[in-house]
Image (cartoon, rainbow, N blue to C red; front, side):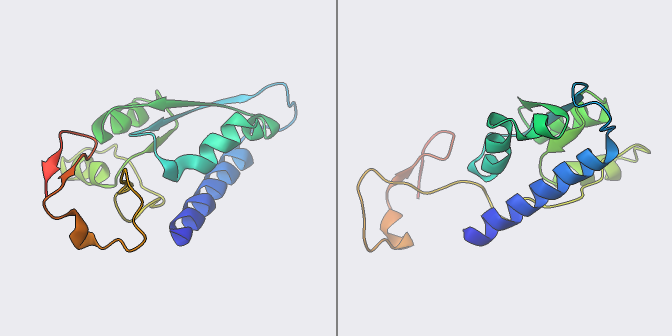
Length: 148
């Protein structure tokens, strides 16, 4: 878990650094407007949310707007239409667009996560949890519950 958070923070810092390097820093009052579309709100984006809430982007001359776009296809469409400058979604959308023969396609520059960003939580504390403990239980996976 610490490794994943470290990777996310590093990728985020690199992205902010790239954005800062490309903007004109002559006047701090002229903030560069950046829109970021994300496919889902996730704990993995916590560094971004904290930086936004604490005004770190403004300190670097950026006016960042974070928007939620439902689905990777919506994120990709927003990036390709220049409605947003950055899109967080899976690389599969880039592959679909490229394989569709489009001459204008997305380029992924980093992977924020390698696995699903979901967590398994329970109502009751378990000091000796084993994945086998969920057999026969209902799991709510952001959608209708399923029996495992």
